Length: 389
Ligand code: MG
Image (cartoon, rainbow, N blue to C red; front, side):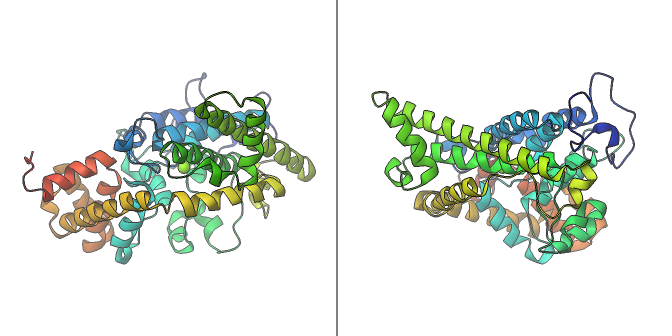
């Protein structure tokens, strides 16, 4: 690949796919092929109707998992190109990173994890991997999307040591808690860009929803520095445009900082290849210490003031009720499931044993739902005046 840094992932040296396939056409690399498989997957299309923070019905301008995913992809591609990393790989990872989210955001994951506590739990990173490895059914020769090792490595951002044991080579970096070795630079980058994207767009969405205020945000350096600049230069434009300009500058500062900091770290360490990256103790794609501190302040503010806001908590409460009752109904009587999901119950009971297999099939079915599909399923089962179809 022309212009790729020596430490970038290179498709020619990929650790490959679980099942060998003929190489892609000459105009497409293995990582482009991964990206294309993700974009054409069912799980990717469902992201459009899954909650990021605000449920889809709250308003058309709020981020969904899909628009969040596209923002992560855009930011990470920009940085990948500047650092001469593999843009195709970081794009594939970014587009796949949130496929495993349950409906209703983190509230959905938490209750599903609770329902699954006797059967191995539920965790969205692991579920993203499960989708691309096993649950998508698009190819005659294998289950899942049969992605390359590097894309799968990037998608699995986190996993417990216990779960890691069943994942072979992909799980080895998670086996010893507290001694996590880094993945490829492209994976590090997609992970960091996820943070840049959500912290900045949640500010935008939180202000739009009026759950947080500019006055509150001005207590935080990262926001205030840019807002003050905008106020000084464009005090007569509408507040909406001032907010957009502040957000735009905020993303810009973080992107520039990641490029400059990471470039300096790469220059100092001089890794010769991707294997050396994986043997380091620390990631090399980072913010500077100072910017990280400011970024964290803002993140903590969002955690306490936005994600814990009573209106967001109420959405979470409703999600808990719906998902818990759906899980209980399907688990106690799988004949209520659509026929394809009943086939999955049979398959997973054969693989994992009776209750564990049934629970996993129900969790997969519920996790795959969009918010609106979950609401519809709930109404069909529990709202007795709804017509059942
Ligand atoms: Mg994300």
